[in-house]
Length: 305
Ligand code: SF4
Ligand code: ZN
Ligand code: ZN
Image 1 (tube, helix red, strand yellow):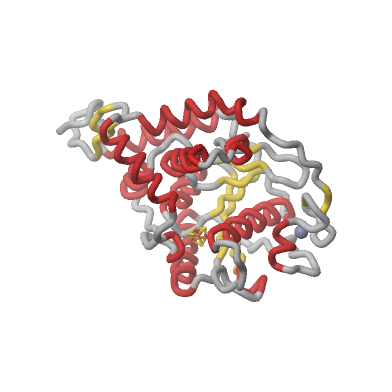
Image 2 (tube, rainbow, N blue to C red):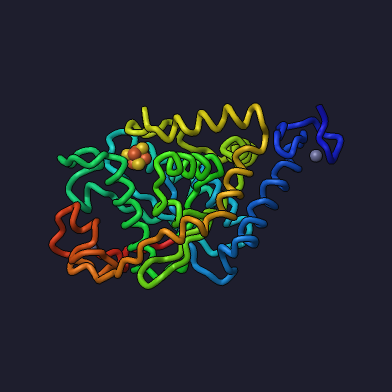
């Protein structure tokens, strides 16, 4: 098959909209879509300092690559979760990706910082739940302490569609009210953006391949059996039968998000007595979970380029 726009052989067949594209036209298509997402949802301004959270995987690597290509002022942060060999390998991929891009990489290692790796804490809380809490706290605090205007993550359309699906199945209206490509900054919460919001996982893989971006393929050992993977599989099956299912589902959700916002309970945030970050009680959930007695300081942790 040939590309829809030129004589070159097709590199990929897109299902929605249905078309064959050569490598060059696919890159153009992908970059145009990211640009449009940034403009449509007003994610970033050209003068902002952006911290891209890189895990070593494809999504965050592509996010850093494309934001740099579009001319944004980015630096990267890798959080080493302390999950054995998996984390060591992830860190080395993150380093290689940032070296290839020529952008500064900052590394925070959970074990060095908190004494234990993810998965080593004795708690009734599920590993992924406190891992998520830990990552979100670290990247926000790091960005806040070092004066970044935004944190960019690599969430793609498949992640978002499965998240919305899973939360709808459980009627977690509070979570749904706060989902979207943009989480505006407020007080000590730095703005969060998802530039790959409208691109499928398959497109992200193809873009990484087209640009020679090397990434970690292995999944985290704790991801096995995660229910989000089951939701992703169901959505993939539906997408196969009815192309466009995922994007229409997510866009429909954004149009109806107000319904969930109406259910948001206003909670008055105080300052955590340990770290000074927003908290519902006396301590924020991070300081409380890790039993901290003094705050983690990230100020000045900036690694020179
Ligand atoms: Fe953390 Fe691994 Fe769970 Fe992802 S799958 S939230 S990296 S523990
Ligand atoms: Zn072409
Ligand atoms: Zn705290």
